[in-house]
Amino acid sequence: RWGSGDDVALLVLRRSPDVGSSHAPRLHQYIHQADPEGLSDARAIVRQALADWDMAEFADDAELVTGELLVNVLLHTEGGAVLTLEVLPEPVRRIRLSVQDRSSAWPRRRTPGETSTSGRGLLLL
Image: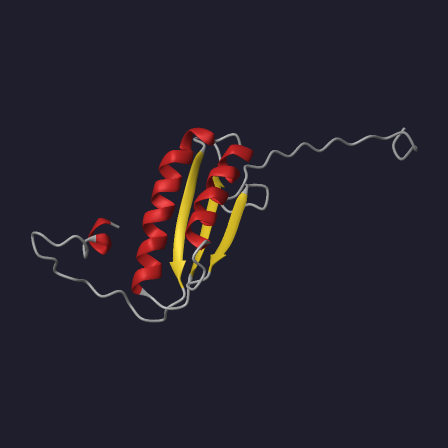
């Protein structure tokens, strides 16, 4: 008999997480140019976030990259930086670390001398 009160319907849906999904762990941190503790705080925050996300095996490399990118931004721009750390969705669990400066000017490519200790950062990135 159709239309009785005991009819049941079952709907099954499986959805892959989207990149940038709100379920993926994500961290945003602003580093002010004039804050002398900002750089060490940012490295510690990255290390702690990765430990909290059960990804501590990436902490040493992520902390090193964080420091290098932030030093570059803080030395060569005005206005501080925004650090973003996020976990990319499966199948391969990875992290994305980005540092964005607050400057509206384009980076200037330098031609460092053979013995220069700086000026290669943009080429490496």
